[in-house]
Structure formats: structure tokens, C-alpha cells
Length: 433
Image (cartoon, rainbow, N blue to C red; front, top):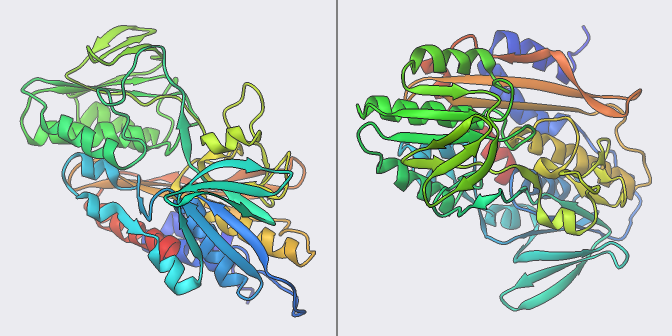
């Protein structure tokens, strides 16, 4: 009997068995791309990875794992630990602590021999093939044969009097998360939590709707009698429309006020006011999510087209269209794939495999498959899920969604809430441990 392909297993798992699907997420890392390196001795190729999140850490780990004895891997990040955006909305409501979403990068060094450099990458020189890193000991240039950029997102500053310390985004986990948590904890009786959703694409498609739900649940459980106003720049819910639509109209009826086609024109952080296409809206807490774009280092390296927000890449290798030996993965790349932690993890493995093949003079895998999946808490006890797989289409030279793999939970459940932590722990382990 023919062994089912990975995509066949994913299709089966997304419709039949969610627990099997969680396990497949971990297995996918080892089966998406298995490098076939030649046995002849070659000098160590230098690969520098910038960014220690789900994309960068995964790329560094699998380069070292698959290319042992062939590559010298250096991982650069401004912090020796990564704070996960995944599950961070539960920190905002107090269900989890910051320690629950903080993972150190030390295991990547001790277990896989990756050189971890704590410092901020400040400049890429494509001609000299170096990346400058500012460390406590000064600025050092790191030479590379291949460079992977996974710096996450940057923000477009809105018009008006905007101050992120007054109207936090909490879309990069860390101090912003604890700031928003403290503001939520200070909500008064009948207080309004005002938030917006930027025009897609943005990091974590279901994330803003998830945040609206968990804040509404917090207000409901605390019997505050307040409400959540959601100003969505999109014409409708962009992810899990059935699940979040039901949550807004039924579970949190009278608490969530959802406003589609509501574009924020400017922000007055001092008064917690959004000037929008539908009028001025204020709240006791204002959670402003700016429009997003590729990480600053990607743009500064000249990898983003004028007037665009994301870096165009070849999805067979994630090599930049302008500099093929500079690879962009995760949130900053411009393919049609969603910007999520699991997708960054999957892209990292495709990229790592392509680099190892290139080192041996081989072409990249011609038909890579990636997948994106997430669980979203709806209440303090129930969660939903969303999943999709993508496959390379040679005719368009793009990753296309496999429609049969696309789906969302029929309804939130307590079982999904438990599975959510299995999923997150599996992803954390596959990326950082």
C-alpha cells in the first residue's frame, strides 16, 4: 500500500482527528524537506540567521541538525530569550504569566552547536556579504555565505498624536503585553475597551478577533457591564468568520460591538480616541494595532519594493528576488501565506533545506508544502482552531492554498482549549528545544 504523503495526512487530520493533527505539526518539521547532502568533504558554509523567533530559531536549529559538519550557523537576536506572541492574549487577561510564554535560546547553542550572538543587527551589506551587529562589546561584522532574515514586523506610524505607551499595541510580546494587561486590569464598571484591526495582511490573522473575545470574556466574568468596540478596517472577519461571528453575536452579545469597514484615520493617544471613517470613537482603554510592514532591517537592506510593505521572495528557497543569498522568512516575506508562528516554522524548514541543497550545488525541492495552524481561546474555558496547507504551483511560481485543507472548528470547546496548550508546547519544542 502506498504510504500517504504529508499533504494527504494533513488533509485527513484536519477533517478527522485534531490530536493527530497536533502530532503532524511536529512531524512536518522532519518530513517537509530532508536534505540529501553529498558525502564529499566541503568547507563549512557560513549561515547567519537574524531573529530568534519561530522563523529564525527554527531555521538555525534545522540547518545545524540537517547540515551537521557542513555549515557553521550563527543566530543573532537582541535578546537571549524569545517572548511568544502565541498565547500572549492569555497573559493580557491574567490567565497566564509572562514566564509561560518566554523561551530561552540557550538550548539551541548547547544542543545543536549554534553560535548565539546577543546583539542588534543594524546593517546588511549585500556586496561584502556581511551583517553588522551591535553588541555590548561594540559593533562587529559577521560574514556570511547565506543570510536568513527573520526580524518579524515593523509598524507604520499613524497620523495624529500617537503614543504606544498610552495606546499599546501588544503585538510584539514583552513590555507591551504587560502594559496592556495593567490597563485591562484597571477597567472600571461600564468601561469601554476600544481596539482596531488593521487592513490585512498583518501578523496572526485570527489574533485581533481572539483578543476581542478574551477581553469580552474578562468583562463578562468580572461583571463589569462594559463593552468591547472592534473597529475593523477589513470588510469582514478575516479569519474564522463563523466562529468569531458567533462569538460576537451570541456568546458576547451586548458586549462586543463589531464595526467592519472602519478605517482608523488618526489616533489621539492622550484622549484614547480613534478618528475613523465611521466617526470618532473613544474608550477607557484603547488598543491600537498599527498597519504592519517588514522588519526594519529587511527594508533597510533594500529588499522591499518602493511603496510596498513586504519583501518579495522565491518560495522555493525564500531567497530575495534581488539578492538570492539573502533569505526572508516569517512575517516579513511577501508570499500569500499567512503570517503566523506555525507558518514561519514551516517556511524556515523549506529555507534551511534549500540552503543546504544549494551548498551542494543542488536545486531546491520543486514542490514544497507548508502549513499554518492555530488555536484561539474564545473564553476562559473554550477555544477554536483554524488550519490551512499550501503547496508550490509551478505555473504561477507561487504557494497556493490547498482548499481542501482549509477549515475552522465547528464550534469552540473545552477539548480544544486543552489541545491548544498541546499545540503550543509542540511548536515551542520543535522551534527552540
